[in-house]
Amino acid sequence: MMDLTQMAPGEKGEVIEIQGGYGLVNRLENLGIMIGVKIKKISSQFMRGPVTVQIGNTQVAIGYGMARKIIVKR
Image (cartoon, rainbow, N blue to C red; front, side, top):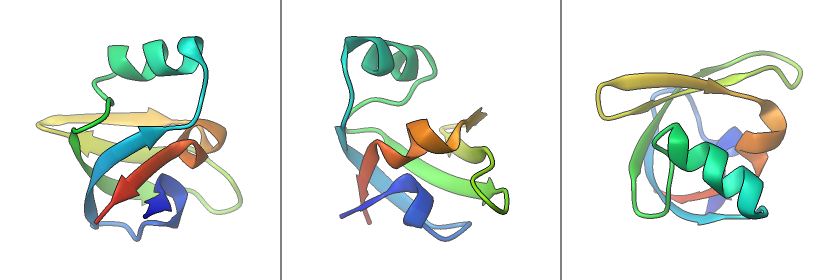
């Protein structure tokens, strides 16, 4: 288990936990990121920039702080 920021670009995993309150969980669900979803990390910026992920055929960029709260399993 690791958070999304620790994944290497191109690596795939399954979301197993979101460490946040109702607001964060709701916002991520609106982007298609929820527990049980398969996710692929596309890229991340140097020094705490946004993290780009792919869910199905959709790519989404989320902030570094949000990405740290998404726990995935390879």
